[in-house]
Length: 145
Length: 403
Image 1 (cartoon, one colour):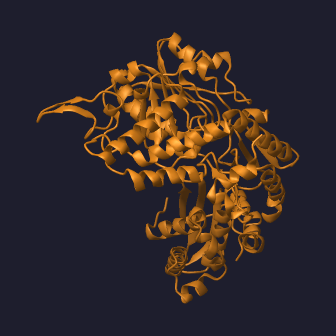
Image 2 (cartoon, chains in turn blue, cyan):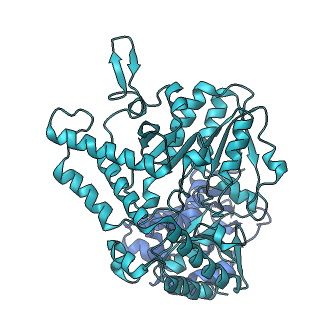
């Protein structure tokens, strides 16, 4: 997809009118992610229940439209999923960025798969992956703070 | 007046006809004459220089030393041996910080920097200050990029070094080097100048400026990557210990010890980058053919056009002095509600190359109260038509980003 079309059709909406920006009332997981090369930062909050299901998620932070939209799209995908499912999605997204995703993984990513082209631009890949890397860290390390 | 259509034919990469290259403060493009000079070196006289026992090596040495002579003359140095070739300005400043800094900085000394320094002129001094127990002192400019008497008075009795950029890579402003040098010398300090952004755009005369050290990178002024130089006043360089050690920089070596070669070899350990030094020489020839008066006039005209157009855009904030003639062709800006990386990406889809981010000047970003900025930086081969197309594209950026 042409980059401007990508902004117009997907990124702008999530960037200017994010569905998941703000604080959760009772997060069980909080994790800060930073992209040092451009200063983008994200504060990812999750509410995970006793069955390991992500019942709610939100993010705060500042950054470019790609990083903000990617985080918002990610949360659309992971809410209601188990931690394992969310990690599989993160694997799929990061595989897509590396160019090694299977068709199955792309399908799994749904709207997030639209970020594939921007994720292949070396300068923007880190913007697109900031939220996903933060998610991966918080779930793998169980980084409750 | 620069005939840009004639000049652009000298730059093979500009022949693609659609790309607008406005990232010249990051690196310039290279004319065919530079590419040919480097190729000719390898085709005709390639050998390890400075060991000349046969024709090719003698030729390589002569080409390398001819390049040094050109740089010395170009910068207004008194002697060729005051020019030390390095990889770039960063390596040259590291040389000064380790060698001069190591020998001269003591606990309690002050190193005066400006807040507009590039990281290449901050980190070497932070590290040197830590090693010596010295302290960094920061000069802060006003909104026009000027230093008040109060700020300049920070250069005082404890100051051992003033390390300052000649032209800010973000604000474009030229700092008053001659005055800073006089103030440094008046308190017995030395002055080291980062010339990475000034050397490509204005005539430099290190002797007239009265500076002790001056560093620059070739790649921002038409030369290949990987070649730059340090100018150092001979008396200072002579008194300094070596930075890197190894081959070529020695006089006599025993199992236990060594003595150093005279200048400039003392500071050029290992096999030198003769091919790219020759390219730097060709770049100097090219710049002198165009002439710095014409270069400055052209860049100032483009900056004026760009800034005038941008001032009419309600959501655009400009940084740096009001006067376009004080910008060295560098126009740094932000668009309200749009992250600079998104601005750069949208412009890229219009084949316009700009830089976005912190420009390796994080303390300056903090001083300006911004996380990052976008920057269009122009050179003598850019055209008024390119500025017009840039302005047109810029006017549509907010629309593309959903506003």
